[in-house]
Image (cartoon, rainbow, N blue to C red):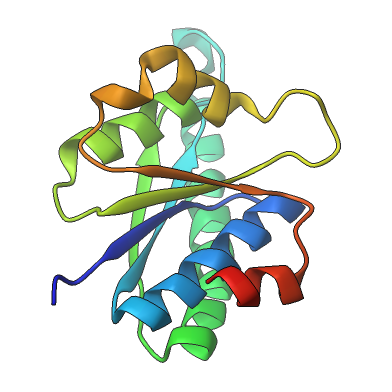
Amino acid sequence: MVNTNFLILVDDSEEMLVALKFACLRANSTGGRVTLAYIIEPSSGGENWLAISSIAKQEGLKDAKSLLKQYVEKVEKITGKTPETIIREGKIAEEFINIIIEDKTISIAVLAANANSANPGPVITSLINKGIGSFHVPITIVPGSITDYELESIA
């Protein structure tokens, strides 16, 4: 059996929790694993703000590690396996796409669409604009409003 690796973009949105649970449930049913990616957006500012930018970068890394720790524990609780974690700096949509393109161990990228907006979210929109057909993995988009019961019945 091929070891399926589900990529999740970690942020603090409610819909991310839906994508995370879906990926964990699918990992359980396939014997796969989960990879969590957190992308730190660089602070804006020119070279005059170098010291401030450095502090912001350190704070961003601290926040990333803290948030990832929470979600690593959630993944371990559901799957019994420690997920891989990735931290990158850059524009969120661009870096998420770069991870999909570069990391050949990723089998499926899982995102949840924003349930409270006509816009599914910036990352999903970027994936569509980039051309989902050009990626080497399927992109699964879970409705952000799906219930736990519904998730469990399809995963």
